[in-house]
Length: 169
Length: 415
Image (cartoon, rainbow over all chains, first blue to last red; front, side, top):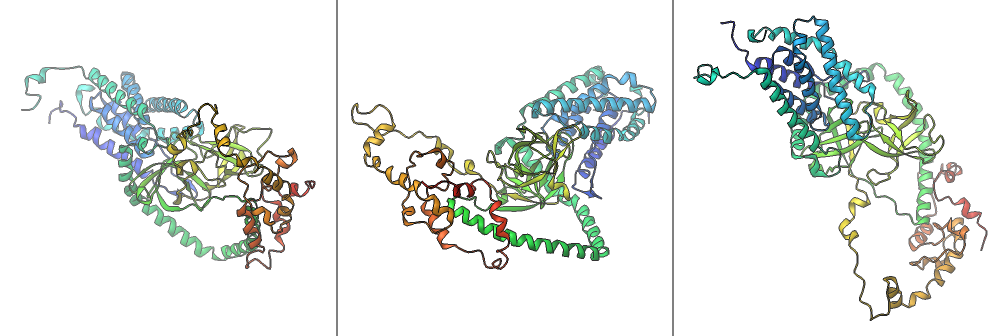
């Protein structure tokens, strides 16, 4: 096994994508516990952030597009909304990748929060223009909180694959 | 031969640039999807074949995944029912006692309403058929609040049909597939529902914002809403029937009036999809919009369209005298509740100009139509089950019926 071994796409792109989508479906079932509904985090955001940090890739943006479209079809929102938001998040993370290299977990978590906030801001602006009504900030805040607590999953993915391909160290 | 061994393997493109190009291509595709989306229209074809296909696939998946949750809920209910049977029995007995009194009032009111309707000749809405369905997926985010129900085209569900839980209005159907229909909730940012305040019939538009309590927009007048007012659908626009319970009004933290949805009182697992079609959907719109061709006129006699019709039928010139006389005399019998006189049986097809302004306010009762005349005489008493108790509630009953109140007619000076 040589050090220059390439990283198989299905390992760092395929598996996290499937995991994120399955979790989305599981959290989409109508279930109430003590009168409270399940939260609705954007699970693909963790994978999107991790993919951008791990390495640049040609396949990753299309994986992001697929996940975004799935969210739109599953949640019944405007088709393309989450696809665009996730791609913007991916682009920001990819652009800031060199600044994130070697940073501590807390700094990366902050970056993750900023990227998530940018995606949600874009969604807010689009919905405001499309529906001619501003979405509730409280609802956005809840989803933002539910999403940023997912960072440990993204961090685990980064730790697993960041050094897997020595060409991108 | 792998790519690495081929001569092209040496051709290296900076991966960051390639990734950026891929990102741009994916972005263009996503934006194209976003621009072409028309989710909340009433056109069935706007929902799209892809959405229909995904809903058809997702509905059974969601149904299976939601099953453990349903079983857990049923188990918890069973255990709770076992341990709290005594207190629940006591509560139900109290509630039953109260409901019996309301039943008697309801019977009396229904009878009164029936009589008023027949007297006024009102054409009431027909009963609305409905379909039961189970909610299988649920999205609650700020940008999309929809649910997937497991009933679709096979049960004649159509886009625009209202959806209710046992407590109140949930939303409306925006897309139908085979075995599934997508329900846009009242809380979605794309949802606009014409509603009214039950206390004073003030109108508003219920606007979703992704949160649990949608806003009341376009309120008119000074303080039209009070805390705790019941909010019902107004039926304006014809998309929803009038009078469906929506919720109660509360003042939001932002100072705006909001609605605590009645459907939020319990988990929404089963819903009723009302197969409601209003007049504008039922009638043949094309036939309505066709302009009738005026009949040929004898050379140069008439210029306008109305004149030749009048000229062709000279007899109606005498008819206004009949209805005018009728409208002047009949209000009294109608209010007194006595059987209308035979003169009322003559139809009044042409409405004559009101002889005086005071009478015009009470025109609903003034020209008794044939349909009003018969039932009022045929149905003099209350239904049998409530016959013994109906004598008490009628004291309150006449106060309740809305719009065309009989009292002002009784005070009208005789002509």
